[in-house]
Image 1 (cartoon, rainbow, N blue to C red):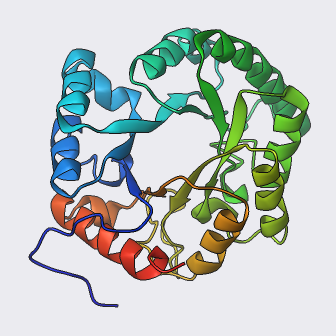
Image 2 (cartoon, one colour):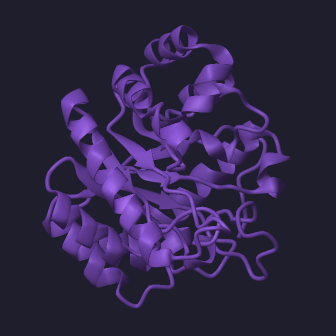
Length: 280
């Protein structure tokens, strides 16, 4: 697949493309990231609290306002350790100050001393219920992003859309799901669970990237859209049939792409989105 080189690619899809700062954060701090997005007509981003800390909240808010960029997702609350949960109220309130649509939940995986996956999941569910009450008071939504089952050991205990939908149904308003193709493309229930979430109005985001063969690292070897084996067109159509009207959000954790010029990475990402999602 050819890429557009040597030029800035504008975000010209009929529906918008959002960029998650994680895609270029190794070589672009938040100020640089927002400037690069604005140059390309990208007006929706997802942000990370630790990146805001690096430049200061005031500078981050001013940059967003000056470029006319809004925030979709705020990363994140978790892992669910007592120390981190003590910061949950602050994270929720800061996400609200940044006008974020939703805050991501990151449960963390199993510890060696635990070993009881059922108990770990029950603990995570109880903590999410507590966080939801806090989020409702702040006026911001919580987002469950189920991760690939390969990450249950060290990063999450929520590893399917079925589980996420069940939990959202049990907890009620104010919580929804984000579909990241990297984590759910394998699921035989994918279409049914996307439609289930769509009918309930709980689809909060759609993250795109690709699954490479071979995958050399479980976390930092995601592919650029079109470089791997995920049927992105089919999943996109599932999302549209479900009623989702939000942006296609590029989120790529990749040592290879992090090493490249961030402007070039954004140009290639926009070009690929135009090729893959532009006519669906």
